[in-house]
Image (cartoon, rainbow, N blue to C red; front, side, top):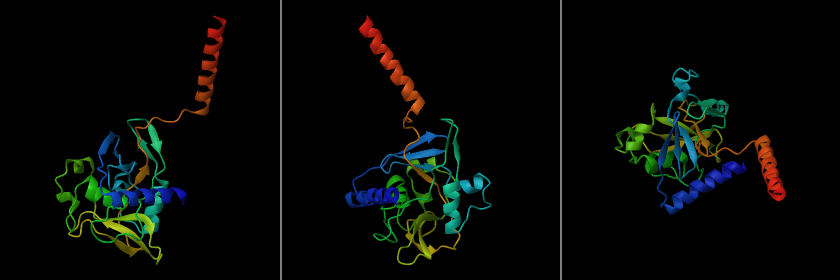
Length: 212
């Protein structure tokens, strides 16, 4: 809950300021980093099909959440497997329909990829669009509607209502796009054993200097 609150707070602050200019960085291995939201997207927007998990990638809201939460993705560039995936975050009560950038998909559509309300993102001339493949139409967010939990938020990427953020019954089948926190290129924290060896080495170096 605390982590989700921090995510939504960041999204809201970006929407209010309107000044943040994101850069999408291709990290290789099928991973795209947003340096403003500090999240990493799968470049394959229908990976549930590519991975063989589902025949067409369409899932109800519960199944989409389960797929993202259970996803293990191997990063062939860094030889690391990531298992901290989720559906994109959406702020619940501040914006519906068009020009909503206070969600991760809205930010991707309008800010990162230069999408236009009421048009498919595939019509955008932004060169960053080429970083992604297999973009479908309607995508689930990870957030249910607070006033009626039988509904959840979704985002339209490619129809004639592209850029629309709205609500749908959870049993409806939409697509799922996985995102994870942080940057895969960030330096990993040292393991405890590594820290211990480093500490012993520094202590030994200090002792040798004193003896000298």
